[in-house]
Length: 453
Image 1 (cartoon, rainbow, N blue to C red):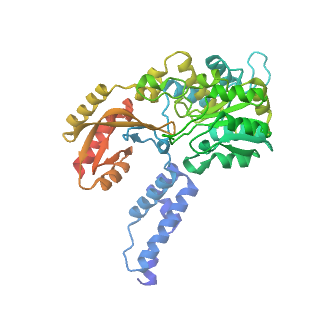
Image 2: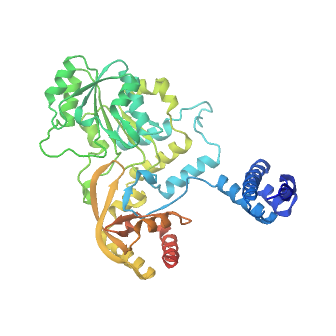
Image 3: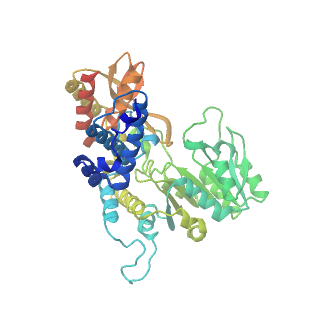
């Protein structure tokens, strides 16, 4: 292309003076639009030098608008979870109850009494908002909420065990998602790790030997995302607590999953609840807010007041403290348990408790409306590092295809992405994890998508 032809490419100012340019300025703001136009014009010049025609000015502004829209589009968006994994870590773990969402929205939209005592008119403490609920629900002396359970573990160890020996069994030196390792947390906190027992067998005498050698804190950690089966043994929490207390040593449990309900009532293996561990004599327990508790991301610490006072005063406590939305969300979720309505109100417990015959009805309705697919028996997973490999009977919609990977990719590109799974070269959709309010959207999108392929 001749140099004179390149002069036909308009300037940024000329494009901004056009009606479409003025509209873009109003919609996206000056700096963003200018940068989008400049980037677009650079691409036009490169293409023109290679002999390609110069687009019309309207087409140029349309391309600039695409860039501006892409730059301002949120990267974190809702998706439809049709995988059957209830606590899907990659999909944000626990969806929240309507009451929890409303509570978080209310404090976000307004000023609030986060650190203001309405009775005295003076400064208050933010920790009281969820603490009173936890004390009433669990019968503990004190509680504290931080931004996640990894922070809770780090805070406990930093406050209570810096430069001190901490006992933990070899079998509990776990690594969970994202490379989070218990030994690394201990090292960063300044605690001195004293691993006891073997991978599969830990005896009470292992604890006693370590206590006699000067250990000042006993810690247990939830296995999270794996099991040890076969030739195994470990002492009960009550036996460990009795022994630790004889040596005036606190017993801390990183419970992780945060369950307050007996999972056995839903056909799952029994997961020791927070209350059961407290009754066994554990002095401090920390757990996640967004796993089996079913609330927003948080780390919750409960237990003895003397230990909690030290934790709350530690400088690290301020760095990891919960904000107003987290505290209001945790409080609203805990209220469901206090009112004995968690199974009816908390989405993950509604999913876990959902009967297979009800799921079958939904799967049949899907197949009928879509006009394709086979209704088959299958299994859902609890997931989320809470009940590793545990399954719940479910009913699935299976669509057979010779290009399952391309289908999954297309589903992910829908306006509200649908996340499914492949099983035996078929696409599998599990109704258990599709939220009721997403059902119509799921079906309408899937219907249009299947017609287009």
